[in-house]
Amino acid sequence: MTIQEIARLAGVSPATVSRVFSHHPNISPEIREKVFSVSREHAYHPRLSARQRNVVIITPYSSLYPVQCCVEMILMALTRELPSRGFRIEVLPQDNLERLDSIQFCAAAAIGAEPGDFTRWSDRFSVPLILIDREAKKVPAETCLVRSDEAQGMDLAIGHLYERGCRKIGCIIHGLPGTGNADIRAESIRKSLRKRDLPCDESMIYFGRDEEHLEITGKLLRRNVDALFCPGGSGGILCAYALSMFNRRIPDDISLIASEQTFFSRYGTPPQTTISPNYAALAGAVADVIDARTSGNRAPVRTTLPYLLIPRESVRVAPRGSSL
Image (tube, rainbow, N blue to C red):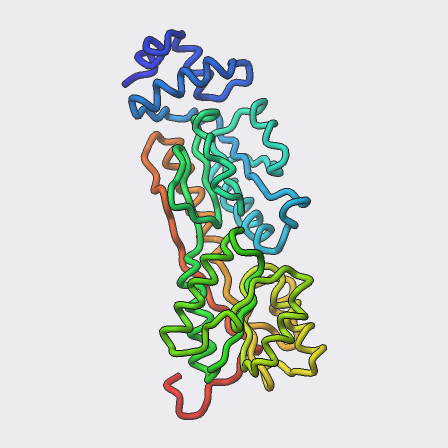
């Protein structure tokens, strides 16, 4: 299938097809949809112009999703990796996506966006969309997923606490059920606790927004937990503060693992043991997908990368006689 054949089937000129695939702003929605429809029907993927090296990075907008350290660290990794591959970057908040109709770009990468927000992406654009840090049972056309392995990450943290003698681990998952990665994390934590015969009922695992961490920490302390695991958001900062309010010392009285926050975790008192996405690897995987598509090659629909464990001083030392 050639661009000339696509043009003939769509009833337009090859120049028009070329403008559609390069996302020229002066193409009507009707013509764009006609060309896209023909190309989808014949499984045609254009070789994107080497001159169009603009990548749009879509970020959450503050009124819906306050920018947090994870988003910032992914963005930082992308701004290092993509220019090293010859791409230019434009950052666009998700509440300003109408601007996509007036710019030319060869790919887009959305950080922390819900897959359901982009189900009609292929109806508007012929370029790939990479969703970062999200999972979806059904991946929309022209979309690829690049994410960290939530099940492996949750098990990594629970296993680290268990190996150091913790047997009653309370968990506070940032976010609400049905949003982001909260449900995947909750189920993975339950599975990890269950396989080690540790308590895993609902009184040990909570979903929580920032303002709820103090109250939830109090509930878990009444359950006599010997460790806290707080994946996502600012859980490490909030739980450290909450434990200080309850006169509990880390790690003497209670061990703590949270998600890495570069400008706090290593400088906390004590420095916090954390789990962290491999941000450099995530950015590299995103760039690999874009490189493949701009070269006219297939790219993996799903890329899943392991979490890293960063051991510091907020987890108790392994008990004597352990295998560590």
